[in-house]
Length: 250
Ligand code: GFB
Image (cartoon, rainbow, N blue to C red; front, side, top):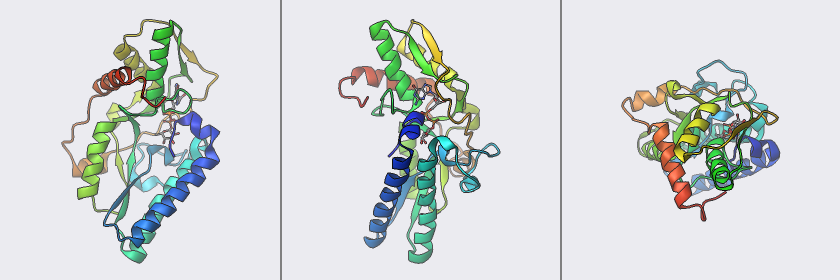
């Protein structure tokens, strides 16, 4: 069960319970059926709210997560704890990857429950169609690293085949590719060729200011991996959304 900041704020207990139930049912069955390898997803939002930067894989359990998604964060952290325990007692090869904010075609473009990038793509589509202002929530100042879903898919297949540590590995673009919400909104505006009014509704939460993650561990394995440039990823996603508007999740 995943979602953006605002969905986490609304359904914190469900995020805690449902994700723990998924962990327990999936991993226990995989142990019983001797599944050779399991790669589960954590997220860069599960790290301690108070931390030094850049965040790396050793910091997961170093303190309480940001309160905006504590339920989701604790459930996800337990995946790592369970993987270590299944390995120690049963020799299971269960591991986790830690994607940063994912975006791309086939996403959940929900205005209320979606993550920031898909929600903006849907919002600007509606603003353009209805001639209304494009309203961004919060100040636009927070910083994020965005990974294109096609890149994440390739890296998860790599993890399934060639990553054999039980401990997590962050799958993120470089720290230098971190952008502000305002910058990413401007890229969505360019890709959508929106010319209308842009408004920042600062009565809405900014959530975590930043969660800058280091991909040094990944770079040790794949020093030459080339991530899709964010402008190209956003353009492809905007085009996909327009072409698939009727069937897209929104
Ligand atoms: O992707 P997002 O919802 O979640 O991004 P997080 C939230 C940031 O985008 C906040 C701003 O700074 C919001 O103020 N924002 C601006 C918007 N306009 C919008 C909008 O229309 N919709 C949304 N959703 N945000 C999530 C975690 O944190 O990161 C999840 O809550 C998950 O559990 C995900 O881990 C990867 O990046 O803040």
